[in-house]
Image (cartoon, rainbow, N blue to C red; front, side, top):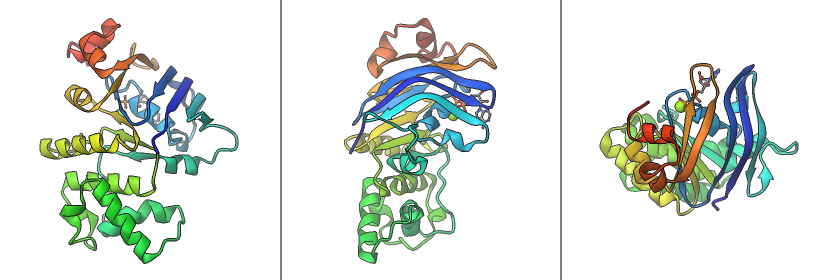
Length: 259
Ligand SMILES: Nc1ncnc2c1ncn2[C@@H]1O[C@H](COP(=O)(O)OP(=O)(O)O)[C@@H](O)[C@H]1O
Ligand SMILES: [Mg+2]
């Protein structure tokens, strides 16, 4: 299921503002890639170009190419809705639909995609998605209660269940633990280790220890100054980025001298 992503010469704009410039990188399947860098360097912006979510902002555009197993996601005949189904996303704040039941939250993405599904198939999908998100045992007796009744960490795992219910190939996560306590954070990190067996995972994190713990490869982004575009400075195996990066800026950032 997991697929490889090849990004070539990507420039990302908000109107006339060039927010991210000249990114070329490869993201490996069945692995976790972390994006790190100071606030405002374009990590979220770049992440959203990987599933065509950037362009929903008026005036926003992308040039360059983003290929998933060799198919350009920005090709003329590609449906952005299909791209977002294949490349799922989990956000910073857990955002379950508050009045919807846990069960309906898991099925929300599937129903949005107009897939007709029988009651028993739906039951199976709810269970497998919640199991996949390490949440089943905690909620199996209260599937009809509202998603908003769960703790923050459970809500984030519910959002992960909702994302995997549509059977994506890639999961993008934008600071998925930043609103969570340390125990919930560890639960999500454990889950990410499980999920990478099946998915290509990209995680934005401002937490260096988290990048070091969960990721196989790390990409460091930086900006030269306010109003300047963010750039990919360096990408390598996570151990190399943290122990012997090629660039001084990377070393300063990972050692906490900056950012
Ligand atoms: N919706 C938007 N409209 C205009 N500019 C934006 C928007 N979102 C982000 N930006 C700008 O793009 C740059 C990168 O932001 P962002 O991707 O959020 O950085 P990061 O996630 O690394 O903190 C910043 O200068 C930010 O102000
Ligand atoms: Mg961000």
